Length: 184
Image 1 (tube, helix red, strand yellow):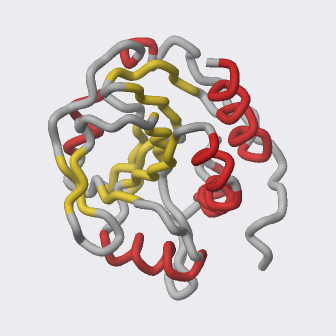
Image 2 (cartoon, rainbow, N blue to C red; image 1 turned 135 degrees about the vertical axis):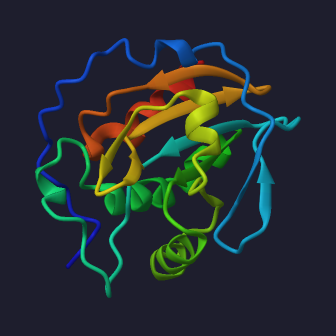
């Protein structure tokens, strides 16, 4: 399966204001493990902007997706989303920004995905739901397991300056983020 191909955009009927509370919020003073298990502090003094994209789950070649996964609006396409950010990494750097992925998957699953897809930046595990709780991120659950809905935030000097939610098109999302970075 070629994960770099477009997906049919899904109809997502979310309340557009359900993440308004994030705008101008300070990032929490927490650290999350990256794909290598090393802790990365979210709230830190960087000269570049952080483009933090939250996603629910990337598939694993040896594991089944949760039941009816592809029927959940906005759930599928996370592998494509990671590949889109990976493929545009140099553009993010040119715009004085760096992408960081976050999901509730385990460090082991994130390590497998970043190795397989050759992702060169940090992807963090929020399996403890620390960041989800602190930021009050939108989630959904399947069989007592919590997943983050797709959302992207742009952080400058530890303040959330832009929130993309809901994300209607995985195919167009990275370009929307890059355009925002260019004009802001």
